[in-house]
Amino acid sequence: MTDVRPHSANDDGVLHTLFRSEQGGHEQVVLCQDRDSGLRAVIAVHSTALGPALGGTRFHAYASDADAVSDALNLSRGMSYKNALAGLEHGGGKAVIIGDPDKLKSEALLEAYGRFVASLGGRYVTACDVGTYVQDMDVVARTNQWTTGRSPENGGAGDSSVLTSFGVFQGMRASAQHLWGEPTLRGRRVGVAGVGKVGHHLVGHLVEDGAEVVVTDVREESVERVRAAHPSITVVADTATLIHTEGLDVYAPCALGGALNDATVPALTAKIVCGAANNQLAHPGVEKDLAQRGILYAPDYVVNAGGVIQVADELHGFDFARAKAKATGILDTTLAIFERAARDDVPPAVAADRIAEQRMAEAR
Ligand SMILES: NC(=O)c1ccc[n+]([C@@H]2O[C@H](COP(=O)([O-])OP(=O)(O)OC[C@H]3O[C@@H](n4cnc5c(N)ncnc54)[C@H](O)[C@@H]3O)[C@@H](O)[C@H]2O)c1
Picture 1: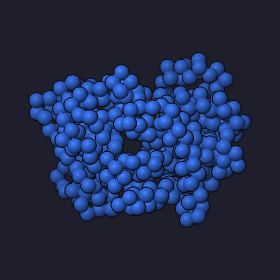
Picture 2: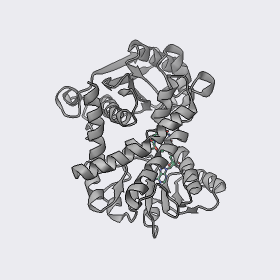
Picture 3: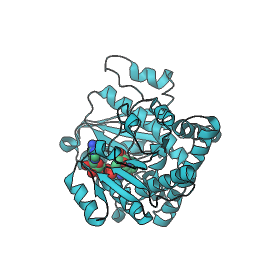
């Protein structure tokens, strides 16, 4: 998926993107304002072809309002693809709240935001994203019935990193199956960059499966927590050292976006890249560079869908076993993507987009 480029506030770039470009095609974009609480938000519904649009709320201090709209357009489009490949009866949507959450976030603002979600009458279902947390969704849920990512006390599923890491692990098993013939990481050396919420749980799955795990993180407390839980792991200083680890079989980016770029891809020794981080490909074309180097890339938005599978389940009264069973399907989905990629002679990222587009087109 091509990114929607940010535009300056004084051109019609965002509107051009929306109405006239390949990256547009959104069904509905709503600008929201509540002067009393200071809320300014954008809710973007990319597609409801498969069902109500589902995607989180990002709370961020954007450089410009146009950047905020671009981000909402881009992220909501990404959710359509992610939800389609996760096998959910949901289209793609995303919201952004404009401003510094540390300065602006209040119960009044979140309740006002919830009223805007309500105004869409169920066309958009919200959840957490960068800058919003489970306790925020509990407040947003006071003013509408289309809020997921709530706490268990409020009928929610709580921390989504449990099933996100489980899904990434399924994607990694599929990658191992495709490349080495068996769905296991036993005896393989796996490097996890970023051992926060998702990376920490992922290390647990890998150790249990018999992998040899190497980790790195910029936060000492994340490293100490995972080392205490799994004393057998190796810790290295930084991501550059991690990707150069001798005999590394798998690289799992689990920190920030852009991990696969013009500097890291030529340096990679791992044969598989499969991790939780969103937007791992720094720019269009990186997926081809990976394929040319013979590196199998499990598309990020496919393997990290465990979290959205979890929140979607909340709408039916959360059932962990049911959500986990659905997240297990990430293994078969990832395998199907690799097969399609081989058949169409395209990188897996392109094959994933094609399968998602097909599912949406069929639903229409
Ligand atoms: N939490 C979810 O359910 C979920 C779902 C889908 C995708 N993701 C994505 O997965 C990634 C991880 O999410 P998370 O919830 O674990 O976040 P987190 O903030 O809990 O963990 C990220 C970790 O990465 C570390 N980190 C940051 N920069 C680093 C660097 N340069 N090198 C090494 N480590 C670095 C941080 O210190 C932190 O420990 C993010 O990209 C997120 O968007 C998360």
